[in-house]
Image (cartoon, rainbow, N blue to C red; front, side, top):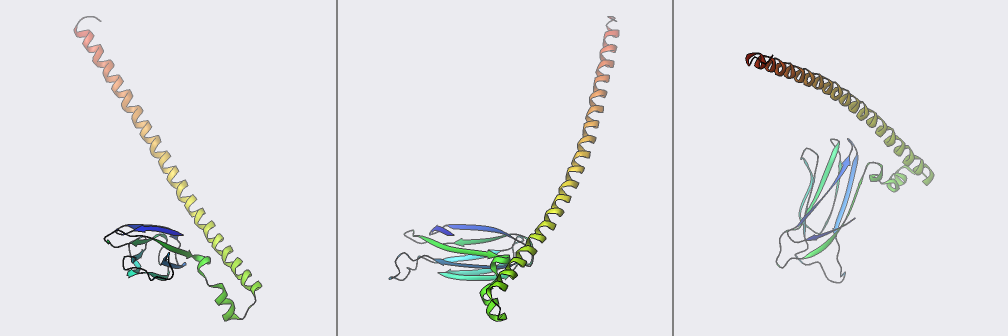
Length: 190
């Protein structure tokens, strides 16, 4: 993906990553004119943080970089690109690629190391994808169970509050009738 940044600005991107998933990210500032080196205004600070705020990658004043880590918790990981303030303001683009899970594995390298053909590599990819789908199914079932319990508890609380509201309404109505009757008896209209 390509992000447009201006000096003094920032852009953040988040991705939901599961526990123990490998994550690979690469970024570089796009040089519109390859014959000229990037000016000093075209620098970035990059930070990758976990859902609880732990830093997994931090780089200051860089033109390009790469980060690799294994997720130590499930949740939304945030990558923030910050362009330092510069006068006059400069605009530039950043190419960013972020892969996690099965996508992050270097299948060509695995094939070379294991001396296996591409058909076996494809089968291993499919097995990893199947395992990922299987794990997601269990997570969805767990979330469904949690939502069912939440729905059930909310329903019972609403029933109790409705009953309480009915009791309060009937007691206030009976008090009003008693007060009206006593008022009318005092005025000798009844």
